[in-house]
Amino acid sequence: MAFFRFSPERDPLNALMRLQREFDRVFENPRGFDMDLSGRGVFPPVNVLQDAEGNYVVRFEVPGVAPEDITIESQGRTLTLSGKRDPSAAPNASYHRRERGMGQFSRSFQFPTDLALEQAEAAYKQGMLTLRIPKRAEAKPRQIAVRAA
Image (cartoon, rainbow, N blue to C red; front, side, top):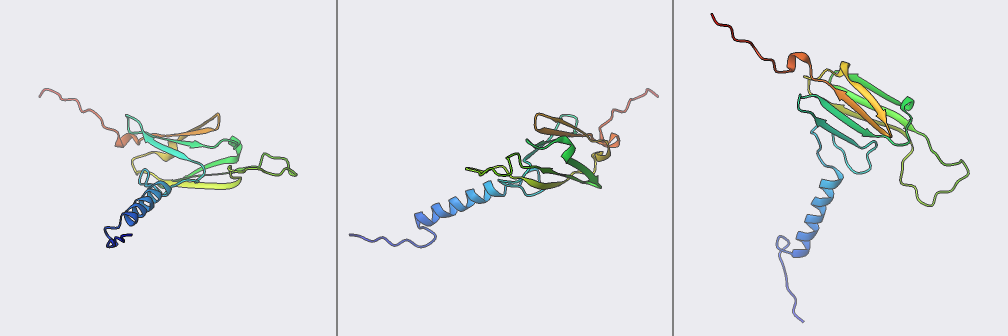
């Protein structure tokens, strides 16, 4: 039987393990919109996007949370969503599998200064909370008319 010795840098098993650790790091703590660290298991999951006019749309997945149990606050550039998801099972029930978390939650995000957080509007439909944050009027591009002199 022949034994092969690899230096730690060239060992194929070490290379595979490094690759696995890198995949784990990327999927567990992806850097999303450069606003906050997120990862698997963070509640509520969120998507942040910017429309063609520069306004932001934030979509939170909040199934099982009543709209009256959600609070949205803004202070400066920071927006905070908090709330509570109550358990839906009977008090004497025993779980066979429990993947949905219960209780208090809170997520905070920082937005650019050119957004008007005070004019944000929220809509709740079928477990999705959609928040629309318009761009400040002074931050929007404007056209300047040219007059003949």
